[in-house]
Length: 136
Image (cartoon, rainbow, N blue to C red):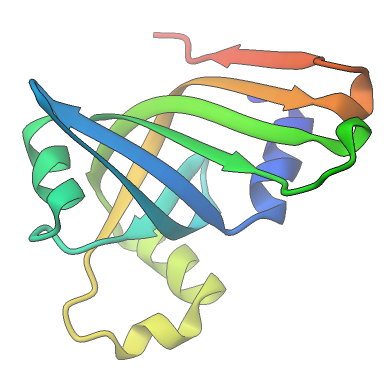
């Protein structure tokens, strides 16, 4: 089970940085996300650079960060996971968080099911990290 402090951090934010790659090609993108049933839900067209790379290799990395200059407040999450097209439950969660997205004609939603998470939280002590790995 993912530590509640990690889930609270994920729910508090709404933009993730996505890193994808396949062989010698790689790309980074930013996306709004919702959190539903332990998965991150985000939108991107399959025709984007990262959309094409995800289709070829569904293993991705991602991150989120609290921007602050106060060292004692630094928080950030890094993770890896598996990407898949979103189901109806994920779609409802995304549209609830971003209702204006219903107007996007070709809204393509994806989910990331995390496989590993590393949460750095300096509010717990300098450099304190919480690690979670999905059990197979």
